[in-house]
Image (cartoon, rainbow, N blue to C red; front, side, top):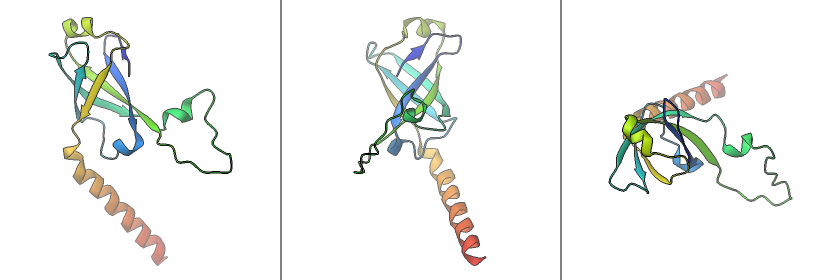
Length: 127
């Protein structure tokens, strides 16, 4: 992850694809900065990348060797930092962070998506 010093500070966190199932834009985030263990920084999920990091690389990884090895991909998640100017002064690019996303509220939304998918599949099967 890196923090970019702009008027709107943000972090791009690379989560494993298995960790983003219940993540949605607007969810609250807690950031733990290794350099400042007592500093409490809050944020909000701004956006989730439409593709994994490997899809955007200059030289994409090619695993076409005849053997299939499943590799867990990383999904970039942009997190807007909700901090004042004083906190932004100490948050330098390259600092190590631990990120906790509160996904409790998204369970209902994910269940709705699953229900829609099942309904579409049933409609297709009935045609």
